[in-house]
Amino acid sequence: MLTRDELRRRNALWRELRAAPYPSPDFERLLAELSALTGWNRARILAGLGLGEEDS
Image (tube, helix red, strand yellow):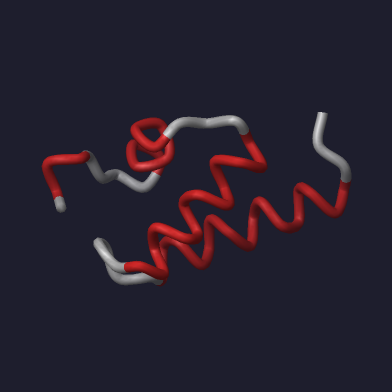
């Protein structure tokens, strides 16, 4: 279970990912940070954004 601060950070990362250009180094950094925080893999996060590996 995530703490309140972790939930805030998770939500901020989702917002930042939605605003970041895809693909870009900044997007990859944010994706990696969100993955580390949530335990979700790349494909799951991209799906949550409505993207897939083929979109790059």
